[in-house]
Image (cartoon, rainbow, N blue to C red; front, side, top):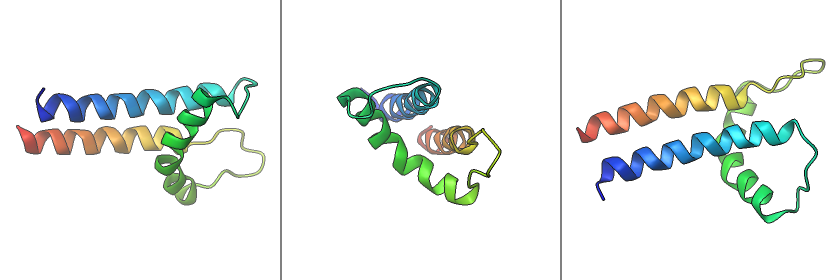
Length: 85
């Protein structure tokens, strides 16, 4: 397994976990379920810095931090993979 494949897969999994977290925010779920906790524990360290940059505003129902995080992660992925090529 090449480093390229491992890094690309890790970024892809993280992106999907962030998307899963967004979808989970739209439905009622058990926050103590092991799968839900796993998603939150993996994504929170990534999303927290973006929430500090763009804090949720009262009356604004959209949390933009996942969207910004995915864009930044894709940029970082391209830079890292570009250095490997």
